[in-house]
Length: 87
Image (cartoon, rainbow, N blue to C red):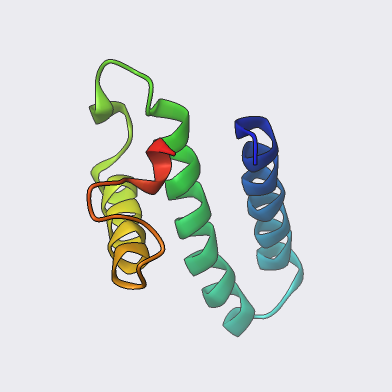
C-alpha cells in the first residue's frame, strides 16, 4: 500500500469516527474517541517520521504506536527490530 493510499485511509477513518461522535450516543462516543486516538497517533507519527526531530510527534502518539508495534511483534507479523511506521 502506498503512503498516499494509507494516509487517505487514516484520514477517512478519522473523519468517520469524528462524525460518529457528533451523530451518536455517549457509549458510541467513548468507542469512537478510543479509535480516533489510535488513528490520529499513527497519522501523527507517520507524517513526522522523516523529520529530523521525532519530538514533533507527541510522546502519547509515539507510545500508542510503540504499543501497536509490540503487538505486531508478539503476533509475529513483523520482526522485533522493525517499526511498522518505518515500512
